[in-house]
Structure formats: C-alpha cells, structure tokens
Image 1 (cartoon, rainbow, N blue to C red):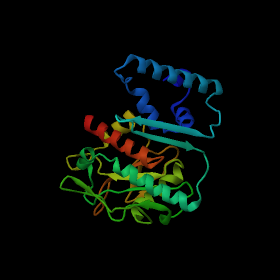
Image 2 (tube, rainbow, N blue to C red):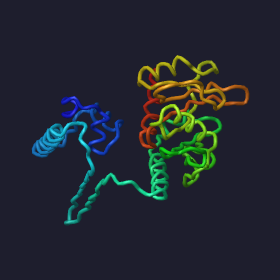
Image 3 (cartoon, helix red, strand yellow):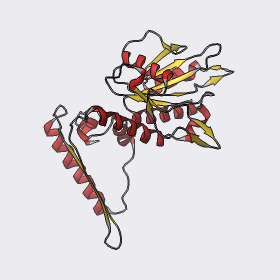
Length: 268
C-alpha cells in the first residue's frame, strides 16, 4: 500500500517483490491483519514502511536481480523450522524448466476449489494446461491426460501432468498465445446458462466487472481478436459442448482468475 501511494503499479510491485500481480491486488484490497500484540504490529508496520521507502528510492524501473526469503517458526521445546531461499533471476536449462512447469501446474491444480467448480464442471470434464513462452506445438503444452471429473465430491484426475496430453485445450492455448503472448495457462469450465442457452449477459457482466477482455471461438477455433485476451467463449454447436476458457499468465494466477470469475457469476 505504501508503494501504491508512491505511484507504483501492481505489476511493478509484483516484479520487485518476486510476487504476482494478482497476489499484490489481493493484499492491497485486504484489511490489515491484527497480530494480537501491539509491539509486533509496530515492528511489522515499521519494517513494511522502511522497505517501501527504500524501494521507492530506487524507483519502479530498478532491476532487482535477487530476492532472498527467510521464514522461521519457533516451537515450544526449542525446536524451529527455518526456510532461507534466494531468487537469483537465473534461467533454468530446458529440462529443468519443463519440470518446473509441471510442478507449478500440480501446485495450481491443488488450489482448485471444488466447492466453486462443481457447478461449472463441463459434461466432458475439465482440464488445466500450461506452456512455456516459446511453445509452438501441442507437444509443448503440459496438461493432465484425460479429463478432471467430480466423483463423490472429489476432483478426480490423472496423477501427473504430461506434455502433449491434451490436444484440444493445447490448441486453444496456442491460438490465444498468438494473440496475447502473456497468456501461457488455460482451463475450461461450463459457461453460465439461461433457459438452456449460454447466458451472454452474465458473460458480459464478468468481462466488465473484472476487466477481463472477452474473445470468441467457434468449435475450438478462435475468432478474430487483437490485444489482451483473458476469457474465450465458445457457444458450442450440434455435438459440440459450450465452453468458457479462462487464460492466465501462469498456472497459479489462472486458478485465482477462475475462482474470481465463478464468484462473479454467482453474484450477478
């Protein structure tokens, strides 16, 4: 909040702190958490202000080359857990990068909220996919083999994502990436309906309320679109189930977007 007051954008804050724009947005909109001890609150507030002022002196365009994260928990009996990680800004090699993408996809999938999703689960099942920035073919896109389905209120899926596992979702992601190069993650849900038809009014509300740019597809083929692209509506056809594709800049942000969209549909 201090950096926002100094004119920094959410994206600039995310870049400097090693976070994401959606996480920064959530933190800014949340009320300040009470710690239950005034001394602790003073310490945290002072540290936050000191860090914000220091970053402000460097400016939002400063090139942060390393972020170090230290987190420690002290338990009764003298035991402690300590995590000390450094973000170096170095690139992984091709194999490491692919494995890292698979892990991020697994982590993101674990955050999917079934309570939100089950009402919008497509009849054919859903999937989630992601690719690297240089992806050029379906084999460059990671997804879960088969589809995710709800069985006994449990989200069932294949254990591990694989590259080349979903031709349909991969194709839509690659088409969207051609239009908006920042979008490298995608999932599909069932669009809202009214009297058995896709509720276009609800879709328009989502687009306006969340400032998500809407595109259209016909039977899996993206229609003409330029600029930012956040959601794609395929109204379906005979033998082709309607679908709402949600796009994101990474798998974790994608899940946050999906939850926000579903919440908006439920309140419209």
